[in-house]
Image (tube, rainbow, N blue to C red):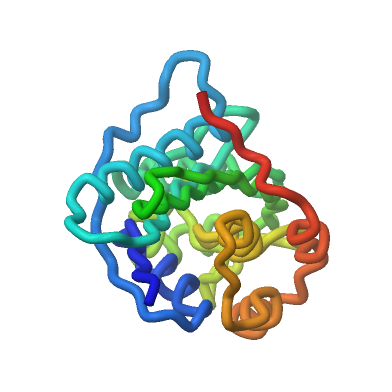
Length: 223
């Protein structure tokens, strides 16, 4: 039986990967997340996902399929990381309010049986609604923004920051499942579930792009 290892401490990624229905283990994979000079946010997340997969693989003594990912929020081409404090979270949420930005998630699949890594990139345009100052204050007081890139969780039941999203919702949560499914296809692993169906059912979102994603090949390259 194939062993799956998710190299992430994120509860959201564990929740989403669990939709595949496979038993899996979880490990942390801490890496330096500082951007490189002249590196775009999209390039950065692919590099970091691959680095996390390599770090996790170096600790293994048996064979496994390692799944790692990294997500960045990009506004006007500049990455927004996790807020340093409440003031930083407020600044991010004010900057994003009423505007569209991009969420990039790089994913890496390391097959230790053959020593090869496949990678992919998902990008979603996220239009934010014009939430009020009071909504910002209440959301920050909840503590939810502090461990989120860009200072928000798109799925938050009270805040609901996005408006009229037309792309991959799971990507904005941190693990684009259809992109991951096509990575599995590239290494001849077939999920036991209908991935777009279980994803849409779980997050209660009618995805308009899953067919397009699944009909394409993985798009990320890394030098």
